Length: 309
Image (cartoon, rainbow, N blue to C red; front, side, top):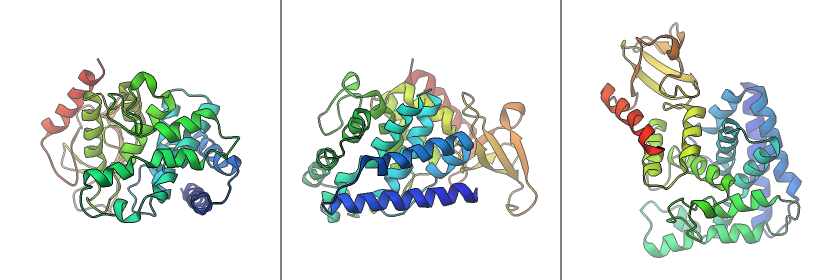
């Protein structure tokens, strides 16, 4: 874990450096950015679960640099689930790293506002992909896939996104992956105008967005297979009264991850690791922050098949 955390901090520092260089009018060689994505591919190969857990850890770090890095990490993890090649993963990760560069050309008072944006302020936000595209134009070696991700991450499959209101068939397939990763990381991170969503509720919103044709169903399915319905790092209430922490996903069994279990009020006592696919009598009843009935989690799980049929 220490090695992964160290690599994450190094990547975050590199990301912040090229953000500041480009926004200050300097030049950045494309290799400075693609190297971060290449390192990500190596880390996924070493331990994909640890890599994912860092990507989906709620953050209140320096925006938009940390958001961009974590979006990149989650997108590459989803891409791995989807079977992308190494080159495609690097293109995807690199595009995510630079996709919010243009936000630093927006008046900070807008994206640091503690209230919901008015239409004029939101119009300013929708300009940032165009600013990003202009800023990366000089990076001659940046792959076309990365450029499309940088420009189209905020597009939506139903044509409601920005900057061009493109529909699914007009959105690059890598950008459709980036859109899901970007939205999920944004939701689980606090913003000046709202607290962070707990990961389970962020997934609820993503699933509902899929039903409204905002997101590519195949990508959302891959997100669930990657992080589970109760994402890695989430605390959950178990049917036997114990408290659990999700430590690994179980692919298609997204309601049955691997969990570390404790007795209530005993988080510092002995724990037990349980693979819920092998213990059907034991189930997750609710995310921990807001205890809900088992039916609440079952209802969301039941929505999934409708979302992509």
